[in-house]
Image 1 (tube, rainbow, N blue to C red):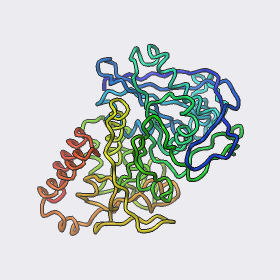
Image 2: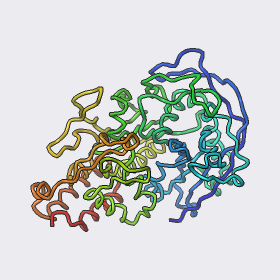
Image 3: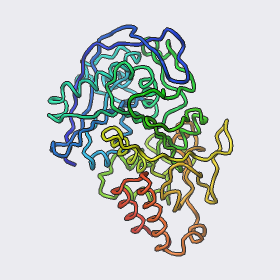
Image 4: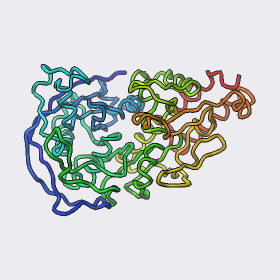
Length: 436
């Protein structure tokens, strides 16, 4: 890959924040420093070895702790695009839970490394926002050490799911004060944000709660890109929707789930050699129910939101670095709310939204909702078409490949797919047995 991975410990004194008045749904929050506490946390850096391949942008991912351990879902989903385009990536342990598990204080989940991580100390998630700010500041101030001499021009903050909720609060409350990051990727957000402040860990009770909904404030000086799957749109009951502007963009992606088979199984081992696309297309025809997170009642989503997410990362960087705005994506069509019901085409796939060959040259019905038990509700569903349905859609293999290729080309032209990913997608279709 031509990338080097390093780990650093970051130490300092972090600030927590409070508000003198209740936080409002418009996101225009006026907060003030509340207290300070010392901390030592960790950051993982993955960067190009060759300085000439560095594009000048660092993706700083707020590591997700929903599973009780630090995870970098946005790295897993977009690492091929990051490597192709020469990004550096940094994962920050911004929250108490990730530090505790690393230190070995959650042995039922993960042994951790009590010796290696003995120096780590986290005062609680009220301080997570400033810890995240200071991590970004360190990347600029100490780039010779942390980035091996690479000099970052842009820092893009990224976070998925639980981390997206933290970023919503960070954007609305802390960014106007800190101004560390040049853009934000808010991936799979809920209707609300995370608490601005809460009681001391391990309890989670908010002391400064946030409203629901909590929109992204509309007076920002940097771009914010919100990326939503069907699961997220349904889960927020449409309450997180807000119009595109010169500084805000949202894509709702048809046929996708909050997390899917690629993220759970294929992505961690995808070397960017095209095998990931082949495995994903194969899984659409025989989708799994067993996952690394447990068994699901129904086969999980195999749609592959990561290809559209690759495009979102690329265009967010163009927006931040060059002022080139991303395409505006249509909203998913709905026929009801509470719960959200998506309008469907004749094949059972959602209408509207950002499109892909998976829904416009389909071989399965893909959805972001409807699975059980609770955790599997995040993984969506796949219902492969019967042989007779496929025969009715595609007279032969060549016709399937032609329609898949056309849908892929449309995605590239509209800015919703990357050309390199399109090559992999078309090659996977050509090598498949679909229509034969």
